[in-house]
Image 1 (cartoon, rainbow, N blue to C red):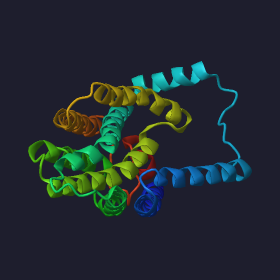
Image 2: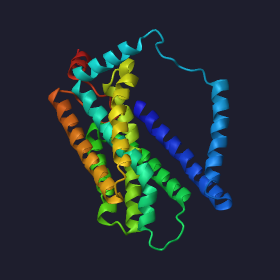
Image 3: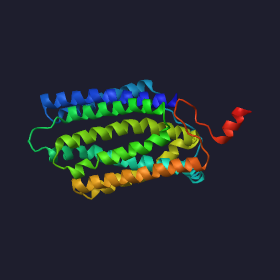
Length: 281
């Protein structure tokens, strides 16, 4: 059930993003490059009004002290190495993804030797189609394999795809195809990681626990972008971080086996050894 929800959420986000890309490209063609930002501002103002009028805020446990929440989250990470592995994988992948968001435009611009105007809105829409495809592939994979297992291959594919701008910096078609593959990996990664967070991180500390890992995420992005590296070096960093994430994911799988955790495809409910004994009784 949880995996299906995450998959549908990614699918829905992708559909909205595809429409946004087409609208942005149309606005840019008709009124100039600033027009998509004006359209976005209008939609954001409308959504803000709707949220204020219809969406009551969920404050969680308002009695819990902030210090206590962070202490409990820190203890949770120390007590379960699987949570540390998951947090590191998410931070590394998101760091690369946010760097990619800022760098795909200049990467394609540098590779464009024909000096034609690049349709950024349509390219973005194509990326979102790839994300939508990834969410559908996740549903297919999860029927036969565990998220713990196939994420290793997804991370490795993502690292290979971002190596293309390094190896073929002047081939715009190859770079665009590689970026499509990366976005497919993004579409698989999000629902898979959402499922794993729900499986391994306790609900009462989940939000605060993941906030710990947003610190290295922001440091990664700021460190890469602040130095004003060349495109070649930036994508080298991205590939390196994804390879590290792949290694961490392999370590996570080995740790699960070492602890005796039984992970299966999402068509079945994953059971720990103690739960299996209770079922047999």
